[in-house]
Length: 196
Image 1 (cartoon, rainbow, N blue to C red):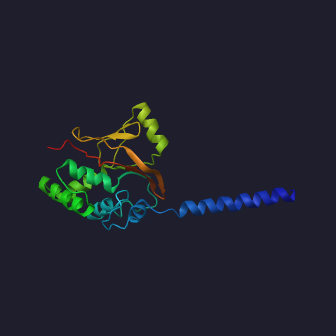
Image 2: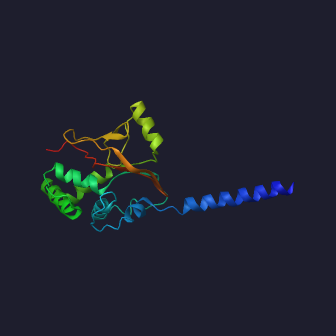
Image 3: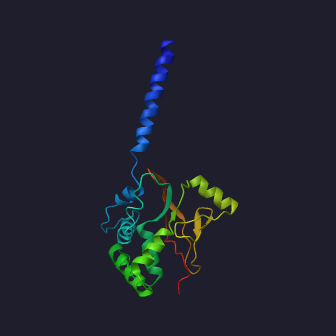
């Protein structure tokens, strides 16, 4: 074998090993969400409220298995603030939003179970990248969730089961790669039922 071909082969081998290690080194979905820190702050575009919700619902471990293949439509803090305001909250802060939403859930029954159901409605039991999402929207294919009820995708958005609230849209960032799936940020919270 010519020396230049040997060098090219060795370089290709090292590059493939490097890419494999980089893929293995990716954080899980839980680890990506946890990077927000969970402390209520003024950054409305991270996942502090989502992290608190995942911990309260005891779903952090479920989203931390590196062998899973999941997609999470992750509401950012602004999405939760919008939901709280749609339900009557007049503030705009993260901590007040979180406390208001917990109170609203408690008024509906078992707050932890309702929160768990809402979060599971944001999780798809397969990897769906942004191109797969757009393909489903164009073909009119519903997207299954871990909760059971499906999501109806439209171009850059999702239709949930609550017709009286605005539908979520994809927001930056999308296609965040985790070792166990993909995260797409959304600008509103998905609701799995028609609220009373």
